[in-house]
Amino acid sequence: MDLVAIVVLAYGLYYRRHHRRDLLFAYIALNVGIFAVVSLLLVQRVDIAVGFGLFGVLSIIRLRSSEITQEEIAYYFVALVLGLVNGIAGAWPMTSLLLNGVLLAVMYLADHPGLLGRTRHQVVTLDVVHSDPAMLRVDLESRLRARVLHCVVTQVDYVRDVTVVDVRYVVPNPRVGVR
Image (cartoon, rainbow, N blue to C red; front, side, top):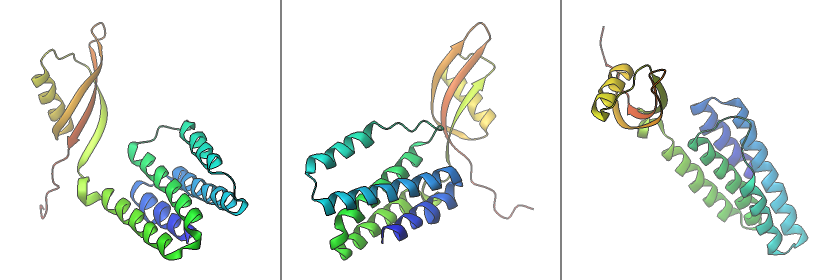
């Protein structure tokens, strides 16, 4: 049951929406590894402290290979939880099935392109320094051809006349039926 759940999460949801093959493999490996460890801990009747120790080790692991987004961290977390749920609830298949369904449904809905599909995030380097936040917003909206929701200046270089801005914006609806 765990293998089916992680394939649905990693390939059916994540890969088809985000197209990062490297993380597809990472999610499956993480899930299968957690499932195996939890299953072994349960069979060996190891003390609950060992389980908490496992969580402690997992919580300090840093994902260093490449920059990943918050959405990708959410997929990592759900891959980990699926392994734990299926390892612990192995004796109760209906509980496992129900929890797998809930986790997958939540991820499907939360990451659905129709929900927030037009919202974007980008770090923009401008060749100008704006002292007025309203002018900065107008400049960003002009360059991005989108409505700026939020922007934060992260760096200003007055010598080179450069501004780095973290921007969240909404792209306009594509025109339907235009010829």
